[in-house]
Image (cartoon, one colour):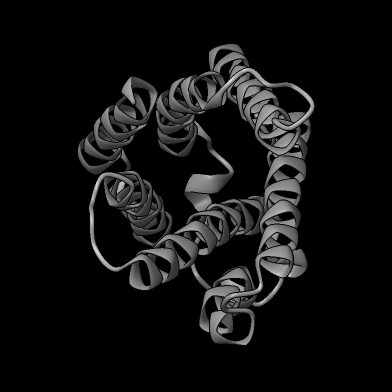
Length: 204
C-alpha cells in the first residue's frame, strides 16, 4: 500500500537527515534514533516479503517491540541530558525499555500481552514526549513541529487501536505517522543542535 511506502520513505529520509545533521557530540542519542528509523524501515519492508508465516510473525513482533522500546529510550536519554547533574538518574536506566525486547521469548505467541505491552510503550512514549514539549523546548519552531508530531502520533495511535469502531483503513494512521516521523526527525535534530542545556551534557 502507498501509505506503507510513505512510512519507508519518510523514515529513510529522517535517518539520512539525522545522520548528516545531528550533532556528533550526542552519539548515543543519534545512534538510537538511527536504529529506531532503521527498525521502522525493516518492519515495513517485512510486510512485503513472502516467507514462513511463523518466522514472519516473530520478526514482525520483535521489530514492533524494538521500535517503541527504542523510541522510549531516545526520550529517556533526552530527559536525562536536560536534568541538572545532581538530579540525573543513572545512565543505564535510560536503556531499560530495551529489556522488553530481550524478554520477548516470555510472551512469544501471546497476542493479547504483546498488544498490551505495545500500548503501554506507546502511551509512555507519548507522555514523555508531551512532558518534553511542555518543560524543555524553547524555540518556537521546534515547539511547533514537535507539537504537530505529537498530535499526529496521538491521532495515528488512536485510529490504529480503535480501528474496529472507526473502519477507516490503515492508510490514514500510516499517513499521519509518516508525516510525524519526518517532523520529529527534523525537530529533535534541531533541538539537540541548538539547546544550550543539553549541549553542556556529559555522560556521568
